[in-house]
Image 1 (cartoon, one colour):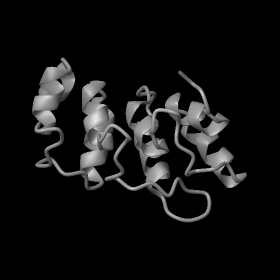
Image 2 (tube, helix red, strand yellow):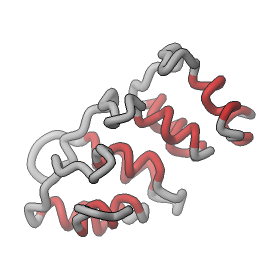
Image 3 (cartoon, rainbow, N blue to C red):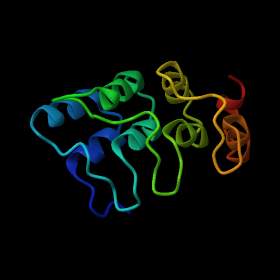
Image 4 (cartoon, rainbow, N blue to C red):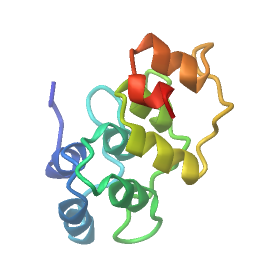
Length: 129
């Protein structure tokens, strides 16, 4: 499952904003995707909420040296935007942050709205927002 993952992938997936920032500053490859086609912004969207979810997502979207240089609309190889992945994982803090930063609440993916996708995935916290 973690084939081709680098330390930065693990730091982001674990929700470690400060460690991720340190790795980026030391030249970690921000554009390396996982074997299943996920970019750093996707991993940040799925990271556990440890009170740095917002910082981690903002870091991934930060342009330039030391930032993740990610786009809020980057699709995974399976065609999912970060806020749809966060909704599927019932990660309400990530969904809220991504919407606050510009993710579309009216976007449809694979024929579903964000809330329909959350319902299909059993994401009760996202549905209650």
